[in-house]
Image (cartoon, rainbow, N blue to C red; front, side, top):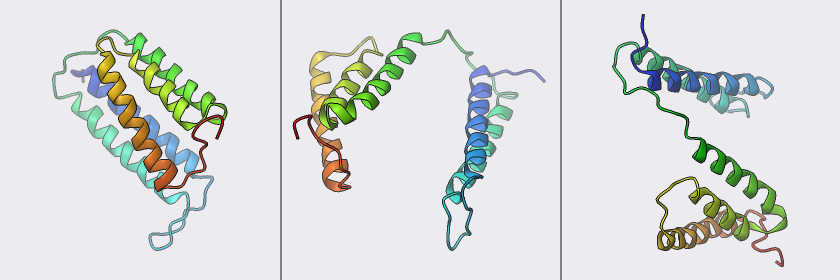
Length: 148
């Protein structure tokens, strides 16, 4: 048995790993049943589905020839990690809008082909949509700005 598609194999392993973690974490919650689902029901079955899909994907890697995995994308990995951490650190002190602004701008640095006009349009659309959905639609108690 030789792995012909590295990307399919490692994607399958990732799905299996996330599924196992979800099922382990869900063990601490009551399961319930199909008619009265407990908090452990959804993550348990979602984890099982992820394990099955991961196994199918990993098995596919033995039959289908892939392109091969390239070098690690360090730039996107570092910038996106920094963007998520920045959002998490800023949302309480700077407010939802400024935290989203920092998230979007720092996420755009992960790519090499971001154009300023596209970034401004993306900022306007994402911030207005997020505020409309989370603050006004779902009524989550986020401060919009540090002064509000």
